[in-house]
Image (cartoon, rainbow, N blue to C red; front, top):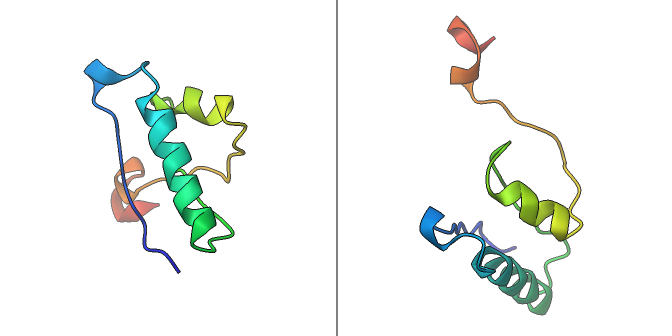
Length: 74
């Protein structure tokens, strides 16, 4: 089992294919190391949504952090 790896692209470098290259390299690494599933975690409405759509990725849903809700996290 591989541990989560996080990467991002600074705003001034977006739109140049760096995110796609990082994602594809991570996918290749996982494949070579026997990982059946990989997850790309993004921010709703964030810059990576275009990458997800372009790579044909399906959404697994939206997770809200406690600060998104009222007192008590509900």
